[in-house]
Length: 264
Image (cartoon, rainbow, N blue to C red; front, side):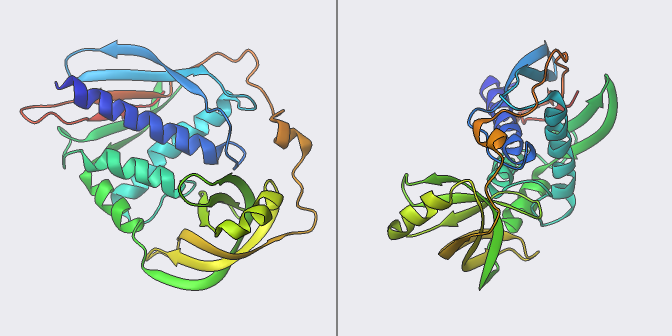
């Protein structure tokens, strides 16, 4: 087994889990994601178990349960359809595309994801390069139109290009908004509010929004978020015990590939 490939796949899985956490936890980004520990490590066909180590502020273990379920359910969708899985942002889809794109086409060279609840397997999904192809097509822009999107505006950034993140009111993954430098003050003022952004929308073949080039942004009435959201004073995990959510089984022959995560 190629150690570099094993580490690369495990890193890719962690990136995906953290990106999903950003959208699953309160539908908002979090300044510091939860960290994960290796709960067990087997040899042979490499098996790696992952469990929460340090739960982020305002995050409960139930939230991370949803993250694990979303990862497994999302890959199941990606194996079957050319769409971005429900609850995944485009960034999460890109993480998954890179991970799946390095896999093979069958059980011996794919990645087996198992969702475990109380130590019992609840669902098993074989992830192959097919998911990578489907996600690549889902991330390809097919339609451009003028329209609008409504949601909570977060994460204004000026690194490289001017961007912001919009979490849709009706659910779904984060939408990336790009805007001009002269609009920076307007977007900074709207940060943390529910807004309607009008501009040029890029959609995939399924009609999902991939990108929004802003022309205007309007703060909607009664849109100020609760103070607890602003300062991160949400429900804590308390004394609940950490439980493994994901186990990775990696197989490889002459051309080693990453194979299987198993969730607990």
